[in-house]
Amino acid sequence: MIELIPVLFFAAICGALMLGYPVALTLTGVSLGFAGLGMALGVFDGIYLTLIPSRLYGILTNQNLLAVPLFVFMGTMLEKSRVADDLLQNMAVVFARVPGGLGLSVVLVGMLLAASTGIVGATVVTMGILSLPTMLKAGYKPSLAAGTLCATGTLGQIIPPSICLVLLGEVISNAYQQSQLNSGVFAPDFVSIGDLFAGAIIPGIILVMSYGGYVLITALVRPQDAPPLKEQDIAALRSENSSLALALVKGLLPPVFLMVAVLGSILMGIATPTEAASVGAL
Image (cartoon, rainbow, N blue to C red; front, side, top):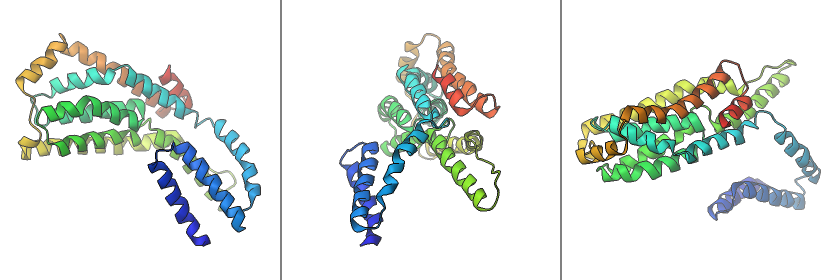
């Protein structure tokens, strides 16, 4: 019976999430429920529950984790500013006559959004609302259009400033320090979030190149799956912006500025992730 508790715990979490309960309430409620079950079976000491307040206080006062809500706020503001709308339209015009040009513009804009927000959900929703109808109208194969959007949206998981890397950095640093203490090293080193950001840049660029290369090769091998935009569609996009160059610069400035201000300050050691996130939010 006791051996089945982890399986039941995992099944309960999955079931609650599928029923639509919020993640925070699901994890808290299921954990407390199984803690009560463990005490009833005599395999869990309830004294450990008294550590919850101190653990919550420790999380709230953790300087690294303070960067998470700041990055979320920064990404939300960028999303609501509709910068992605203008940028995607202008990129579509630039790559209009390139095979798979609309797909390439989606990948590039997704990369800029990921590097500016670090939020996967915001990137996927924004790109999906803006790009999917346009790609389907242009004659893109539905599976290719949806796959490009989903793959591009996940770039926010790895391209800094990724919220996932912030959370992983805290866990990895604690585990690394504990392993050194267990090995007899009483002045342990730590893994900083800046190190993770620096290490994730090249893999993120490789992913972007891979996604873009796949779209381009698909467009060359099967042109019917990723046709170029029609002339009337290009003319319609151009008519919305009298000066394409000016509109492109205006669309590129906010995400590029955020990338330089946030990532540059972290990688150069000028600011901590929390300080850089606060600058980006401002």
